[in-house]
Length: 401
Image 1 (cartoon, one colour):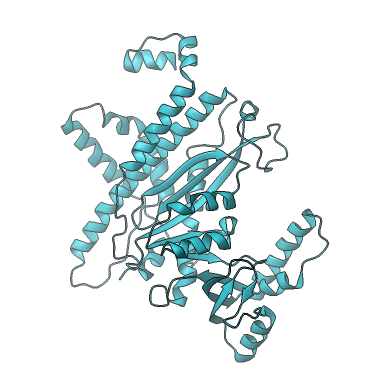
Image 2 (spheres, helix red, strand yellow):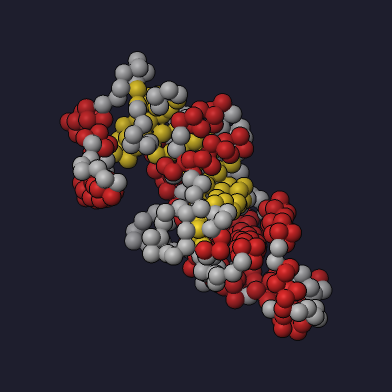
């Protein structure tokens, strides 16, 4: 590092002096740089045409990983890797708006802070017209009620332990629903219900019977998990609910038709794919043992690089989208072309020197470099469909007017 600073920037500093720069002030500095970067993001990634009844489509998830034992004082264990000698872990809470690409949350917390706690503490940040999509780790009926009070919307899977009541206040029997659906030869059903015991939240419940192979796989996984928690067998209610895809939402049929519920929820997996890129390309989990301040600074810097590269990718995507619209007038819907985040991030990582030179050179040189980067991302970086499943461009087409 000392050698690099001297050769690249003409900064002469001793090793010990540099080491001492990794302190609390430096942590606050890089954190403020990240905050500033998040305030200056691009917008309208897929335009207002996508699900126009919702202001934002906010998808949130977290990724947890073990960190060096030097961080045990401030970062508790998430109980993940039992082989690790360290008892320290970190959680990164990440939320972004699918419509604009804007990152609405990017926060480093202790690994022992669970997602449900985060949901309760951040519910006040939700705004009118938002559509919230999260996994079951964030599920809480009081939080859902708060979303409703703020005139926001949610789409969630139904937690297997949540009580469900019909409009007369009677417990819904999933066993009876399964039998009646099978007898009638229908695979899907929708009904208005109330979920929760103390806080009863009015929702639309969407039920879809899963194939037998999916049911058996679920039972195997749930049984294994149950034994790991010291329980000998699954409850009957857990078994019968395993026959269904169960989703709840407070959005009207006009805003979110039942046939689009599952495709929309599948978009949540885009955040899992981003985490995969963070780990495989930027190696956020693999940093050497070092003092706490230096570790956290290094992690924040990696997140800054990730955000910059996301913005570059989304910027090129916006240009492609504008170009598609310009060419598509009067020709009906054109197929949406999406840049693969995984491919783009791998390429952008190799172009770091060029990206950095954008800030240091003349305007003419910067424009030339930006054009070069754009051309690279437009060549062989497309997202491809696999295994005959709907890919992101095809799912997005379902939701664009």
